[in-house]
Image (tube, rainbow, N blue to C red):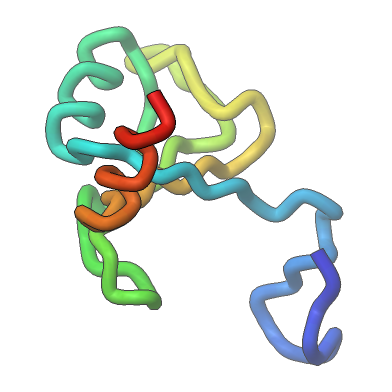
Length: 92
């Protein structure tokens, strides 16, 4: 990523891979399933993101209670809009 203004936050260039975002068909179901597998999420749960889509984040580090994580990378899960889900469905 390249910052638009390197003097402003968030510092998308520090570290080089700030985070990665993934479209998810059914965000609440995915979070429930992942939590059941031991994935650690950041505080805040599912909420509206800056682009208006529901989002949540997988924590970059695991802990004793939830040992699975993004292995050093913050992973954003984003509720895919219907048109994205439909477009992907046409590819399969």
